[in-house]
Length: 68
Image 1 (cartoon, rainbow, N blue to C red):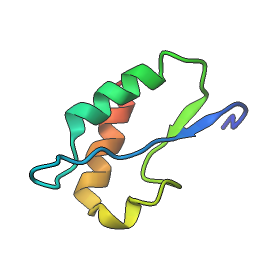
Image 2: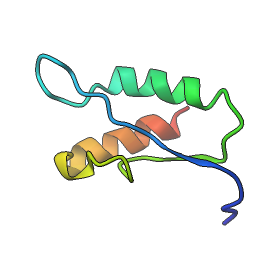
Image 3: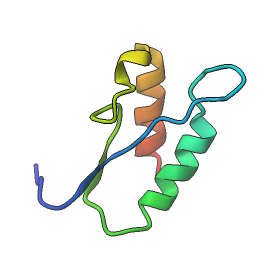
């Protein structure tokens, strides 16, 4: 495993009405971030919202990030 480079700690967007994770906005953000020279993404990591995510939400975000 190569850990050289910058790994971006990414934020989790939430729907303003329902409070659910906004996977469409997240996927859009991932696409924008990956257009820059970064080594990887840290999903559900150091930005503070991970305790608010259940296991299914976190897994859905990981899948969305992996698709980009």
